[in-house]
Amino acid sequence: MVERGPRQGQVTRYRYNAQNQLVEVNVAGVITRYAYDALGRRISKSTEQGTTTFYWNGDVLLGEINEGVSNTSSDGSTKPSRSYLFEPFSFKPLALVQHGHVYHYHTDHIGTPREITNARAEVVWSSTFKTYGALALAHVNEVDNPLRFQGQYYDEETGLNYNRHRYYDPNCGQFTTQDPIGLLGGMNAYQYAPNPMTWVDPWGLKGEEGTEVLALPAPKNSEPWMPGAPLISEPGPKGGMMIEMAMSPGQTRPGGWATTDNIPNVNYVRNELAVTPEFKPEVGTVQKFLIPEGVQIQRGTVGPQTFEGTVYAGGGSQVQILNYSDRAKLIPIGEPRPIN
Image 1 (cartoon, helix red, strand yellow):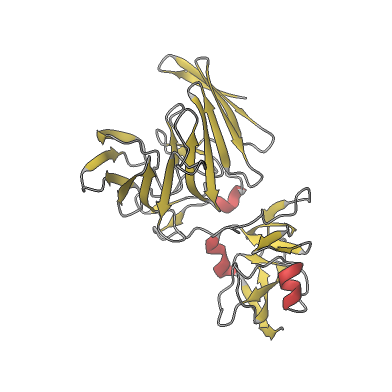
Image 2: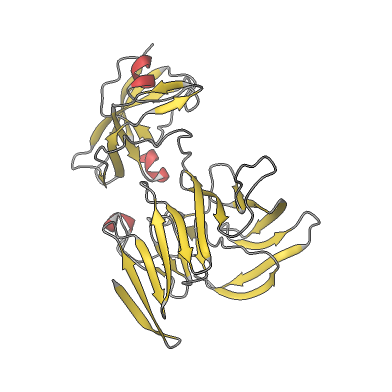
């Protein structure tokens, strides 16, 4: 339990779970609760007005359903109250779909929304922000827009921005909890970025200079990890870690998923590693890499996947490179090994 106050005559109490995730906020007796999935993504927010459920594609927010709002399509299926479209493999918003209407985002040089227009090119939302993201002035507010800095979602009930792995307070320009990856994120465990005019941090882990921060595409079937199996998040061990990676024909750069297993053939890639044809249509070679010491990884057992009625069982070992920029740090060992 963390207490802050008084602020505007009110005391705010924050409650965290064992994973250091914010699960409850009490502002002068008004309570908001949050829930998360196994990957640490926020999947619901409950207030006195009702519950909002969130849907994700990897680390990118797809949409939300608000309790009490009509969310039923003509065919009887459930549809989001609000859907978001982003630039490919990016956290920069392109469009908002709400109640059958399409709105278009206009962002600044770092991908922060500045205006939203409707199909008739009329401005329906426009705001000016302070340097660290706090709202300075709302010029037009005909539609609601919770998106802030790349990867951030504004919570009106707390004034905080949800930033994937933790929460950001735009009024003081810092995160509310320490960096989950420790000193790998920088010397200041609460810092958002050295310069918020040119840096972004969509994951709430480590700021990146420049605006072209790529989002990792998520597996489109089951969760990538075996249910109930241990899942460990840690920096690469002393001396580094040797891995193998299945490569597509013509692929030269490392991807974000690998294994500590010895890959004997394509059948092993498809079944034990559950790499579906949808994710990687062809596998031609295996490349060994060394993950340098300190690179943040997640490792565990491959979970089952399905594609076009076929079940790929999984069960092999799996290593995920958590930060996209760290892929470039992987060191190739030897030449690619052909497999069939």
